[in-house]
Length: 178
Image 1: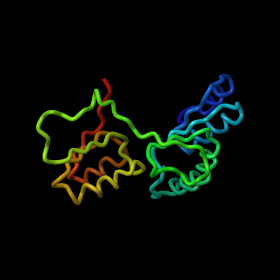
Image 2: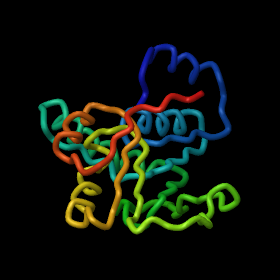
Image 3: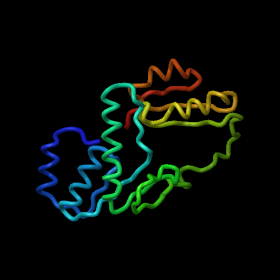
C-alpha cells in the first residue's frame, strides 16, 4: 500500500496527468487509484494476485479487515478492468475482468537435463508474513515431508515463528540484489 508522504502523492496526482492507473491492492492505493481515475477520467486497472485476507490477531488487523471488506467492492467495481492470476480468486462482484496466469520464460527456465532429485523441490520467494498464506504451504508439505523439500527465501515478521514451528523447511533469509 501507499507509504510515505501522502501530501506529496496528492501533489503529483494533482499536477501530473496519466494515461492509465495500475493498482495492485484493494486498500489505500486501490481507493486512491479509483478516486484519481474518476476525477481525471482515466482508466484504472487492478492487478490482483491474492484474495487479501488478514489474519485477525490484533485490533488493527480487525479494523483493516472491516475497511477492506467495505473498500474492496468499491475499488473492483470502479476499475476499467481487473486482471486476476487465477480463476480461484475472482471476486463475486459484477465487474470486467480477465485471468492472466503467471508466465515463465522457458528459454531461461527449462527442465534440467541433470538427474532429478527423488524429492519435489519447492521454493517460496517473498515476504514472510501470515498474509502471504504460507501456513497453507506448510500444512500441505508437513504431511509429505519425505517427498518434498521446501525452501523459503525472504524475511518478514513471521520468519522466526515459522523457523521454530516448521523446522522441516530450509530458510535462506533475505538475499540482497547485486
